[in-house]
Image (cartoon, rainbow, N blue to C red; front, side, top):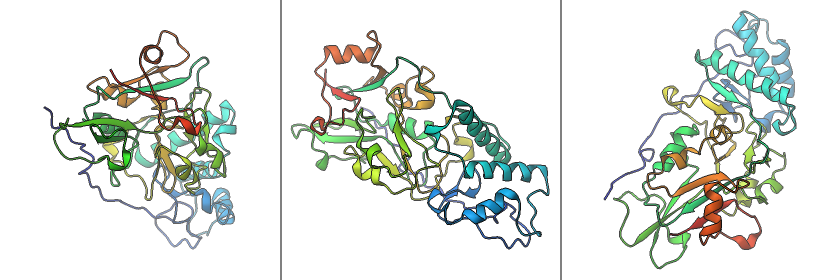
Length: 350
């Protein structure tokens, strides 16, 4: 018997907020308009909410041009000038989906440079596109899952999820034998020794549907499906309306009500723009099949961390892949198939 608990349930970190004038200077008598308060960005130390971008357009233009109050010059040092230029370019960049490869690289370079200016440390961020002849899929062996939640912990660490709110992309549902797939009676936050007698365990997350309803309802096209099947979000274009959350029939999306906080020493610095980069307040988040890993030939963190081998991931277009073997040799099923969402996430039992 094992007694493994989710270590993030008890973690409670305080939120630290930073304020600055419109030009980024934290001192002096600058009288310029402050940035919006509803979109503090952990990456840039500035407020970058898209929902307030238009009503703050004039203030943004002033920041970008350096035309703020003379008592607070953005060109007082090379570092401030670099930061101001980064803020300007990021503030008005286009939707990542519509960018050229060169524009994507420039965007990533700005994020990396901004992080270095803010923390003095470096990180690796990718804009790697989907590979040809790759379509990712996932299978979950209900017979093997023992409810340990190693997958949840690994996901939190890998994807720089907020510690204070205990955000988790993965749910592990503890269900009673003989009750079927009754999610209404499932326990998703159990604090006892597992596996519990008379129960079985089942994981859910974003299923990366082939026909995702979440995409159809987004009013700003901040979410879309990539060529390799991964459903992604451009955090900088998300306006936090949560239509996608309401449209998802699988409870696969999360909304961050506050600025995600990750201790500096715990930040995963191997990032992808569409994956685990540090997010701002008021946007949607979710599983991305660990795009920063999967597009480099690795398994998602949850698959690697699972101690029982209950999780299987691979290329659906590769006839020699393990997931293709599962689909060909096991009795598989998907949740709510009648909805026509075509999730690329299957369940099976030994």
